[in-house]
Image (cartoon, rainbow, N blue to C red; front, top):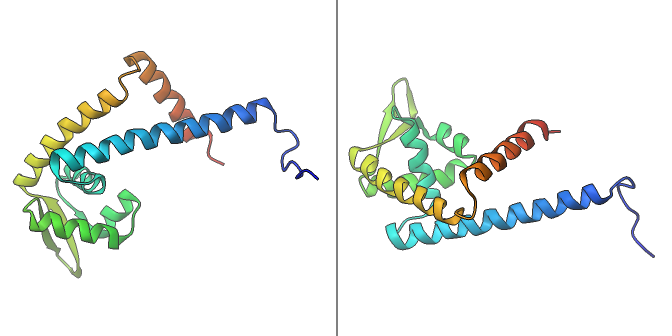
Length: 155
């Protein structure tokens, strides 16, 4: 006995979209794996640590821990451990938030800014290499298509 089709109208378009999703997932995992390995071997660092430094680099005035975890869409607990290590390494400074004794604002130190700039330059080169099969026009076209998915595909 075969399982009932939950979408009787699902046809070749549906299958094509499913194959696309699987390819997007595989491509994402391949690129992410390469970035993780490169950060580990070249900088003895991690992708989550890079992501935290990147968020702080884009917010020079610093961020509350809750803002940082919200921006990165991870728990406060995940961010706290990363921040602890960045503080120990002298890359991040933790400052009290005036008027809120429980909150801290974190920001990159000058040393952290310099280290992130080094890592970001290499990160861009790695991404360029990992996606090197695409020319600039193809990359722009895929980006535009993904933007459409992100704006129009929400249900």
